[in-house]
Length: 221
Image 1 (cartoon, rainbow, N blue to C red):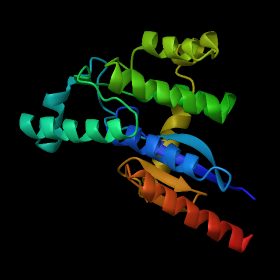
Image 2 (tube, one colour; image 1 turned 90 degrees about the vertical axis):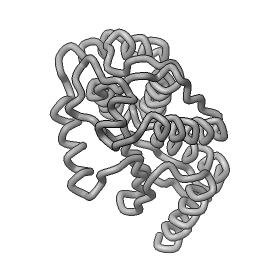
Image 3 (cartoon, rainbow, N blue to C red; image 1 turned 90 degrees about the horizontal axis):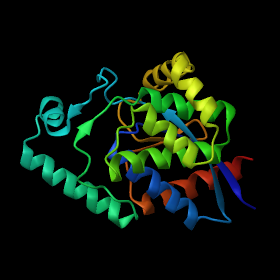
């Protein structure tokens, strides 16, 4: 019998460890196929909610926010790229700016409300690839609408969402909800609303944790 686990994946489009965490989580789920099924929901978190529409040079941003020197930033990028490569995800050097991600979160929430989990998951993957692999601006409506259309989703509806500011309040409420529950860094993987796995963990860590949670769920069923 397969145990179904509901997962709220709290993340930001511009968070490299979130891309790593998602791929590791999915690979853990694949290892548990037939034993555990994952029902993924993507929840919003903004690392830089005050970021302007023009974005900011990534080196300048890392220096201001974390005090990272150029050499430290290069070392961090190399470590992240290596982790990504192990998981089959490419972090390229094309990404040279940090951008606002609020509108991307509004589209993800649109699919949470009006789409399917598979569609929301596909858009999350497309956003990670567009930013981290292709160096595109996830705040650009042109980029966002192109991704939506490439996935075969309703481009006209997505354009209406972006143009109207729809779901803005809902996204802010979700962000406040998770921050109110102590989520101040991402990714945060919340299983069945009560088990927290923090950070971009290795596949083996996710696999062990999910197996243990599924066993607990079955024992109390």
